[in-house]
Image (cartoon, rainbow, N blue to C red; front, top):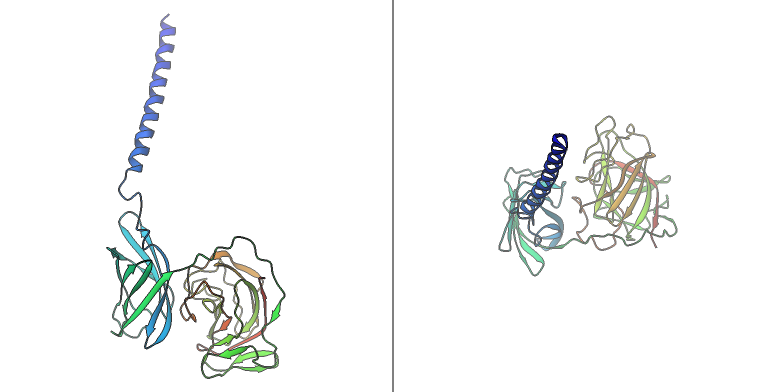
Length: 326
């Protein structure tokens, strides 16, 4: 009889423990749902914005991303006319007003950059005061997601460089580019070179060669730079060979010695990019958040050209082939 009582008592205790555990779980979940800041951040301002700065009547592309950090803080990233994506430690946003400051990056001056703006009817407008103290107006619109609903159907391959002349290309300024012996050469830093044609989604094959310590870049749609730089022996980073400049670090450094021909095979679908360098996949289906410094414009929803950077260092390209999506 005593044994049966002990068993019955143990059964009752087990049931009570189970009921208590369930009650604690429900209370915990309820408290979590009622935590201040469950609806983190502010959806009115969070997200990506394509900006255009008015510099003496010239449209200069820029880009902004705002996101929440925990319960209390908005942070972000900013891309200006040049340089890479800069982190924003704190974004102030209240009653439709946004402001933040940035330390200088490639600017000669040491002053902080100050950005202020107003959100109204889904459009941002404001001013940016550079490290040099000059102030410019800017306007911003929501960046498109560029998500594709279906896989691309590839068209016919196009030879972008004939090997004998610059037909199909134009320089963005005084031209120093020459076609010689099947090679597209920029013998000195001067102007960038851009295709006359524009493209949306595509597969690109391009070969390049640089001398020691030189630097160039291949811009996809004229907006997203795949870095070309003398990087042999360096750790992968956002500003060395194979990187989407300022945004995506390759998973391996595969750079060859200067003076050797190297290859890129790049696939871009929407924002999703894959980079195969010298036969190795170093970026696999990663999202490009926004435009990189030096982009031709910030109109991410539009088709854009292939653009070769020629204002940084001596560079050679050849066998430039593109397969656009239909």
